[in-house]
Every structure is written in C-alpha cells, then in structure tokens.
Image (cartoon, rainbow, N blue to C red; front, side, top):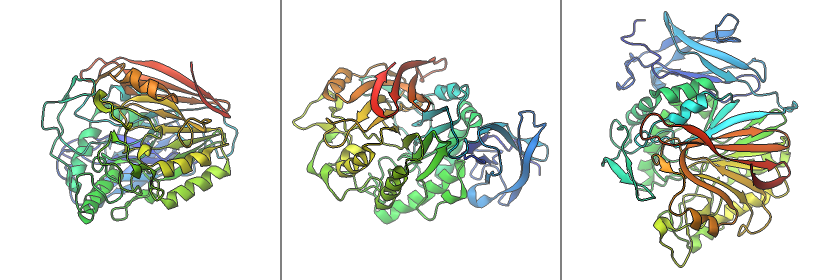
Length: 493
C-alpha cells in the first residue's frame, strides 16, 4: 500500500505489562489531523515484531494485526509467552514503512522474590498551558513502567490568550488547541492526534510500558457517573461519554477487556509485581455519586457526610476490599485520580466560617473515604498515588478527622503542564501547611513523581521543571520522602 506520508506519525506505545507480556500499540495516520488520519475506510494489515535486542537480530515473536476503521485504524496487540522481568523491543511495519522502536519490560513473575521496583507517575498535560519537558526527562529514566493518572487530553479550548493563575500571575496559551469543545468521536480523535504528535510524549511512550487511567478531562471537566458539571441531561451526556471512551481506548495501549461497551469502560484492575507490590488501579469517575456542596473549593456542607455517597461504587469497593485482604504483595499501591487527603484550604486567600475543600476529591465523600481508610488499618504497607491537583503534595492518611494514627501515605504528583510554569510556593503555602498537620509537603511547579521501592523502604522523588512556558526548562529533584514498611509515616530525606 502506498501512503501519501509516513503512516506511523503518531508513534508507538506499550501498556498493561504483566509477567508474560504486554500490549503494543500504534495507529496508522499519514495525515493525523485529517478526519480519518489520511487513511482509506478499509482494513489494513500491519506486521509487528518483538525482539530481545534493539537491533532486532533476535526476534522472539512476530505476526500480523488488522488496523480497522471502526477503531480509527489503531492496533492493539496483546503479547503473551514472554519471559518475566526483562526488557523487550517492538516495532510495526507495512511494506517498506517501519515504525519507531519501542521498549517495554515484563513484570517479575507473581510471587517471586523481588528486591526493586522503579516507576514514574505523571498526568494532567494540558496542551495549551505548557511544553512536555517532563516527559523528555521520564524518557531518559530507567523505569519498569509509568502510571498515568489521567487528564491525558483536555476537552475545552481557551477563548483568551491567558488565564489567571492561583498566585495572581497569568497563565499564557503556549500552543493552541485545534477545534473547539469536544463532543463527537471525530472531535476527541483530533485532540488525541494533536497531543500524540508531541515528540516528548512519544519518547516517553517508547521508553516504557504504561498503566493508563482516566480522570475527568478525557470526557468533560468534573463529570461523575452520568452527571455533567455543565448540567447536560444525563441521556445526552452519556452519548458524549461514549464518544470520549471510544477515542480513549483507540489511543491508549489497553487490552481487549477495556473495549468500551456503550458509555461504559472497564477501568479498575490489578497488577502484581513479583512479591514486592500489588498495584490496584482504580476508577473514581464512572461510579461516583453527584458532587456535594455546589462548586469545588466552597464551604463544607452536611452532604459531605452522606452515608449513601459513593466514590468507587459498591462493586469496585467490594473488589478492592477483597484484594487488600489477600495481603499478597509486600506493598499495596492504590493508583487513583483525586486527592484522598481531606485538606482544609481557603480559595484565593479568603477565609470563611467553615473550611473550604475540594469537593471533586475524596473530601466531598467522607463516608466512603472513612470506609476505605478503616480497611487499610493494620496493613502498614499502603501508598496512595494521585494526580489532579496540579501541585505536589505528600501527606499521611488516617480515618475520621485525620488526627489519629496514620494508616497510609499519599503522594500527589504535580501536572506535566497544566497550570503553566507555576512557582516553588503558592500564596497559600504557609496557611495550608499550618492548617493541615498531616500534610508534610506542598509545592507548585510542573513535573512528575519517581518512585523507588524495596522490600523495606519506599522512596519517592518529586521531579520538577523550572519552566514549561518556553523551551529550555531544567528538571531537578525538589524533594525526596521515604516510608518504612510497616510504619506509614513520611520522612523527608
């Protein structure tokens, strides 16, 4: 087949690593910003290869997959039969056209003694707000995998050249979104194509396999269940959600089990890393009840204590409870999207008679939050990984009012670009730290989290970028925290 341009312009990716394989992905698009990616409306066969070496002298597996127009000519190959705990290289080809080479590692075999795990945590990558400098740094790291907590795309489009930041400075539009607000499948496909053309994002995908989850902006800001924050009737919002989930599946290296069924997608799941860690990937959007108290960052109301409120939904909550009781891994990881710490913080520096909280987080759902934290009591090995806030946070988690003995720790990773370059400290830094004794660290630059895990010690490094509004940003380690196994308390290194 002759293409009018290189068909692998959106790069390659790997995901969902297991002990015997992973998913490899590409999407044929010689003209990525065209409605159909420059592809004919027909099935196209794509050859793939997996090798033990980057030069492809030792090919381990090969085959042919169909790129079908029904899923935008994306390809998801589920590999099995590979050896555990080792790197592999993969590529695709059509005739003389050969894709970039990707690299991914299989996980250690389940239950096998494992002494080390290293991975990155990243997300919130608003195209308009900044450059993907942090992804270039991730691509240079030797990691076992990356956990992406969501907001891979943003569904809106700024109408102004800048917007106000929390510190009073304006956040400029660094690069424009194509199109307007996203509603149709074509809209979402175009937005993903624009993001995927970024070279630093492509490099991070080539460097390691990803575990991907979604938050709100893959669909619509602050959505939960069939509720749109913009007041769209539920039956209409579900049509939008269906289009958004199809595009999400098309662009993520996910298994067939995650093919959307109508407006629903199977997103919660578990991965096991030898005997070192059980990684529970959660879905905090599809099954959550409506947000209480009106807008986010408003005064607390009685609805935050509603005993019928849900974040995970009853089925997912029961699944997670059962998984935690197995106590199979040395560490339990809760990889999820919205902050679990119940922080008191005043919006824009204005204090009120009641604490101001982010009700698009677990702070708006205290009953399910308390149930979950009480289930963690006694484990002594739980680390919660979160995004959404566009800031770095490190804190300890306890049931009830949070004043008791911690049962877990939480690391909130800042954004890749959302919020612009930021500053080392927001205007409310001292105020928020003083009001929340369980909070041990807060910082407001862009970047990602780098985690090194050993059987008895977990170490997390906050990697930050000094600027994302222009090229030349420098990445460095801003802070490092450690947790001893069996003692869920943070120690700054």
